[in-house]
Length: 155
Image 1 (cartoon, helix red, strand yellow):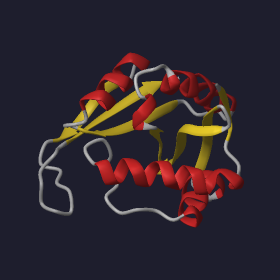
Image 2: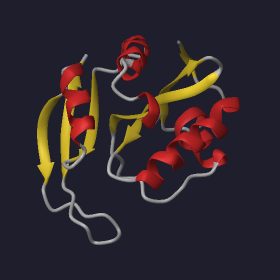
Image 3: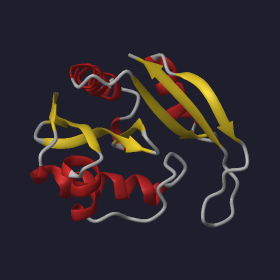
């Protein structure tokens, strides 16, 4: 597997992966599919993008991780193909993300995770993120209350 910085050429594959995860539901607060152009702007080259890496296995994108500014803080999002979750891909991406963030002078990374996303909560816990707040009443656009946990990792 290769972990490398994302480029605009990765946007379509990144959007495909994200949209697959959105369609399955349960592990992201994103509810609407995103175009390759939106992914490119929001996660690869946009003004709020701080870092973005992709993981490839056999020439196929199997995950991506981005850190961007949201509400004044550096926030992380991690997306791994459902076929390859819990195989260390997220950890390998985070090693590069952490290095890129430190090099950029970022002092802390924030994560906001759906409270019902058990694998996501476990992932960020393994990386050392600590709880700093919660929104138990956070609801999706359907009205379904899922809650959110706010975590932070000091670099």
